[in-house]
Length: 178
Image (cartoon, rainbow, N blue to C red):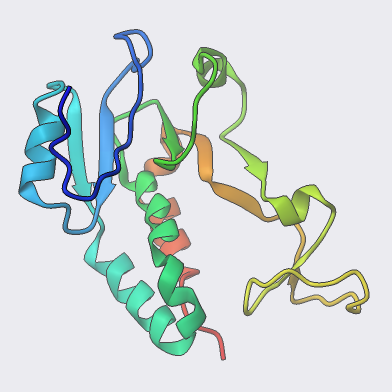
Protein backbone atom coordinates (compact mmCIF):
# COMPACT_ATOMS: atom_id res chain seq x y z
CA UNK A 1 0.00 0.00 0.00
CA UNK A 2 1.57 3.29 -1.11
CA UNK A 3 1.18 6.46 0.95
CA UNK A 4 -0.41 9.49 -0.63
CA UNK A 5 0.47 11.65 2.37
CA UNK A 6 2.85 14.52 1.82
CA UNK A 7 3.56 14.83 5.55
CA UNK A 8 4.71 11.25 6.02
CA UNK A 9 2.28 10.64 8.90
CA UNK A 10 -1.20 9.14 9.13
CA UNK A 11 -4.06 8.45 11.50
CA UNK A 12 -4.96 4.77 11.29
CA UNK A 13 -7.92 2.95 12.79
CA UNK A 14 -9.60 -0.40 12.43
CA UNK A 15 -13.36 -0.56 12.56
CA UNK A 16 -16.47 -2.52 11.72
CA UNK A 17 -20.05 -1.47 11.10
CA UNK A 18 -20.92 -2.25 14.73
CA UNK A 19 -18.05 -0.10 16.04
CA UNK A 20 -19.68 3.06 14.67
CA UNK A 21 -23.28 2.64 15.85
CA UNK A 22 -24.49 5.95 14.40
CA UNK A 23 -23.24 8.95 12.49
CA UNK A 24 -19.61 10.01 12.56
CA UNK A 25 -19.60 13.79 13.01
CA UNK A 26 -16.39 15.67 12.26
CA UNK A 27 -16.22 19.07 13.96
CA UNK A 28 -13.75 21.26 12.13
CA UNK A 29 -12.61 24.75 11.31
CA UNK A 30 -11.63 25.04 7.63
CA UNK A 31 -10.96 21.35 6.94
CA UNK A 32 -10.02 21.30 3.24
CA UNK A 33 -12.70 20.05 0.88
CA UNK A 34 -10.40 17.27 -0.38
CA UNK A 35 -10.11 15.90 3.17
CA UNK A 36 -13.89 16.10 3.65
CA UNK A 37 -14.46 14.34 0.33
CA UNK A 38 -12.09 11.54 1.30
CA UNK A 39 -13.84 11.02 4.64
CA UNK A 40 -17.30 11.23 3.07
CA UNK A 41 -16.30 8.52 0.59
CA UNK A 42 -15.86 6.12 3.52
CA UNK A 43 -19.50 6.21 4.59
CA UNK A 44 -22.72 8.02 3.92
CA UNK A 45 -22.99 8.42 7.72
CA UNK A 46 -20.10 10.92 7.90
CA UNK A 47 -21.30 14.46 8.68
CA UNK A 48 -19.35 17.68 8.98
CA UNK A 49 -20.04 20.52 11.36
CA UNK A 50 -18.00 23.69 11.21
CA UNK A 51 -17.04 25.53 14.36
CA UNK A 52 -19.64 28.23 14.97
CA UNK A 53 -18.80 31.88 14.37
CA UNK A 54 -19.65 32.63 18.02
CA UNK A 55 -17.10 30.12 19.32
CA UNK A 56 -14.45 31.29 16.82
CA UNK A 57 -15.02 34.88 17.98
CA UNK A 58 -14.82 33.91 21.66
CA UNK A 59 -11.62 31.94 21.05
CA UNK A 60 -10.05 34.85 19.16
CA UNK A 61 -10.74 37.19 22.09
CA UNK A 62 -9.47 34.63 24.58
CA UNK A 63 -6.26 34.12 22.59
CA UNK A 64 -5.72 37.86 22.24
CA UNK A 65 -6.06 38.39 25.99
CA UNK A 66 -4.16 35.26 27.01
CA UNK A 67 -1.61 34.34 24.32
CA UNK A 68 -0.71 31.16 26.21
CA UNK A 69 -4.12 29.74 25.20
CA UNK A 70 -3.56 30.41 21.48
CA UNK A 71 -1.78 27.11 20.90
CA UNK A 72 -4.60 25.03 22.32
CA UNK A 73 -7.84 26.72 21.36
CA UNK A 74 -8.76 23.74 19.19
CA UNK A 75 -9.39 21.78 22.39
CA UNK A 76 -12.47 23.91 22.94
CA UNK A 77 -13.97 22.78 19.63
CA UNK A 78 -15.45 19.95 21.70
CA UNK A 79 -18.04 22.46 22.95
CA UNK A 80 -19.60 22.32 19.51
CA UNK A 81 -20.76 18.78 20.21
CA UNK A 82 -23.53 20.38 22.26
CA UNK A 83 -25.00 21.72 19.00
CA UNK A 84 -25.74 18.19 17.73
CA UNK A 85 -29.47 18.20 18.38
CA UNK A 86 -30.71 15.17 16.44
CA UNK A 87 -29.23 12.44 18.67
CA UNK A 88 -30.40 10.79 21.88
CA UNK A 89 -26.76 10.42 23.05
CA UNK A 90 -23.56 12.06 21.82
CA UNK A 91 -20.12 10.59 22.46
CA UNK A 92 -17.30 13.02 21.82
CA UNK A 93 -13.69 11.98 21.78
CA UNK A 94 -10.57 13.63 20.45
CA UNK A 95 -8.90 12.24 17.37
CA UNK A 96 -5.93 11.12 19.44
CA UNK A 97 -8.01 8.82 21.67
CA UNK A 98 -7.29 5.13 21.21
CA UNK A 99 -10.43 3.06 21.80
CA UNK A 100 -9.43 -0.39 23.01
CA UNK A 101 -12.78 -1.93 23.91
CA UNK A 102 -16.43 -1.68 22.85
CA UNK A 103 -18.18 1.50 23.97
CA UNK A 104 -21.73 0.09 23.96
CA UNK A 105 -22.09 0.15 27.76
CA UNK A 106 -21.48 3.91 27.83
CA UNK A 107 -24.61 4.54 25.79
CA UNK A 108 -26.69 2.63 28.35
CA UNK A 109 -25.14 4.27 31.42
CA UNK A 110 -27.37 6.60 33.46
CA UNK A 111 -26.58 10.27 33.77
CA UNK A 112 -26.90 13.35 31.63
CA UNK A 113 -23.12 13.81 31.36
CA UNK A 114 -20.42 11.18 31.69
CA UNK A 115 -16.83 12.38 31.73
CA UNK A 116 -13.55 11.60 33.41
CA UNK A 117 -11.42 13.94 35.50
CA UNK A 118 -8.37 15.51 33.95
CA UNK A 119 -4.98 14.59 35.36
CA UNK A 120 -5.02 17.48 37.84
CA UNK A 121 -8.43 16.64 39.33
CA UNK A 122 -7.64 12.92 39.26
CA UNK A 123 -4.66 13.62 41.50
CA UNK A 124 -6.79 15.67 43.90
CA UNK A 125 -5.42 18.98 42.62
CA UNK A 126 -6.98 22.30 41.72
CA UNK A 127 -6.62 24.73 38.82
CA UNK A 128 -6.46 28.52 38.84
CA UNK A 129 -9.86 29.72 37.61
CA UNK A 130 -8.32 32.56 35.59
CA UNK A 131 -5.36 30.87 33.93
CA UNK A 132 -6.43 27.21 34.24
CA UNK A 133 -2.89 26.42 35.36
CA UNK A 134 -2.52 23.72 38.03
CA UNK A 135 -2.09 25.08 41.55
CA UNK A 136 0.48 23.60 43.88
CA UNK A 137 -0.53 21.97 47.13
CA UNK A 138 1.14 24.86 48.97
CA UNK A 139 -1.10 27.46 47.29
CA UNK A 140 -3.75 28.71 49.74
CA UNK A 141 -7.31 27.51 49.34
CA UNK A 142 -8.99 30.02 47.03
CA UNK A 143 -12.62 30.42 46.07
CA UNK A 144 -11.45 31.15 42.50
CA UNK A 145 -9.81 27.72 42.23
CA UNK A 146 -11.41 24.94 40.20
CA UNK A 147 -11.38 21.47 41.75
CA UNK A 148 -13.71 19.48 39.48
CA UNK A 149 -12.12 19.86 36.07
CA UNK A 150 -12.59 17.11 33.51
CA UNK A 151 -10.87 15.90 30.39
CA UNK A 152 -12.85 17.45 27.54
CA UNK A 153 -11.31 14.98 25.09
CA UNK A 154 -13.75 12.21 26.01
CA UNK A 155 -17.32 12.63 27.23
CA UNK A 156 -20.82 11.38 26.59
CA UNK A 157 -23.97 13.37 27.12
CA UNK A 158 -27.70 12.93 26.83
CA UNK A 159 -29.07 14.55 23.68
CA UNK A 160 -31.46 16.61 25.77
CA UNK A 161 -28.46 18.76 26.74
CA UNK A 162 -28.19 19.77 23.08
CA UNK A 163 -31.27 21.97 23.36
CA UNK A 164 -29.32 25.12 22.51
CA UNK A 165 -29.30 26.46 26.04
CA UNK A 166 -26.40 24.31 27.24
CA UNK A 167 -24.30 25.22 24.18
CA UNK A 168 -25.02 28.92 24.68
CA UNK A 169 -24.20 28.69 28.40
CA UNK A 170 -20.91 26.93 27.66
CA UNK A 171 -19.92 29.53 25.08
CA UNK A 172 -20.78 32.30 27.55
CA UNK A 173 -18.07 30.84 29.82
CA UNK A 174 -15.43 31.20 27.09
CA UNK A 175 -14.22 34.73 27.66
CA UNK A 176 -11.07 36.40 28.88
CA UNK A 177 -10.97 37.33 32.53
CA UNK A 178 -8.52 40.00 33.45
